[in-house]
Image (cartoon, rainbow, N blue to C red):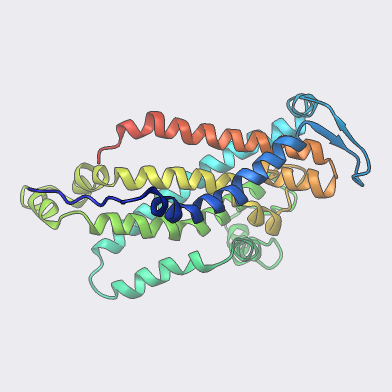
Length: 294
């Protein structure tokens, strides 16, 4: 079998085709990252009238700050919980949608709709549902004997933002999981069914292993999402409170920069956050991808 390969007569066309993506990467990632790295070694006053080079002093102050270490711990709990909840929920819903015969289109459309909701609106929606005064879910919890008030209970506030952030991401994961399931040859599933394998065993031994590339891709995307794209969810629901119970790293970067006006410290935090995400992504591609069967 002869394989057709596309080649370019000159290199200028290849460079021209990748130029837009390189320009976007340079403008929206490399340039801001360079600015953050530069400002992280400076100390500026709130009005930007004086600037002093302080080297690594901003980084040393960060890791000696108990509030920052607490924010780091909150971020780990929030990111792991959000990623696991969003992916597991989406996987279950995709498996159910893949078996639906009647009304499948409407069912899938309803599950995809939350993806069109802005993160801030998702946060406001769940804030109303869990509002201790007017929230439907809060009312049900009170009737069940669970005193819900995320305005004063830090653990409940953390649960609230985890649910809101996960709900926003479930639709994205659902699309990829469902597409992955529909790409699996039906002959494999039918052969397993003929051999006497039940739905749970077929999912565990055939469907889920074949979804490994999709699962790995979504794992990377969800971790990046939980670290970077959940600012508006937190800002719309708890604003980092009560106290600093829900002050995740990306929210603390904004708060220290625009509220506390600590520009150098905020830049140092953004650099640390960027390094953490790059390191996590590297570890996933270096070690976890080896277990993925394509």
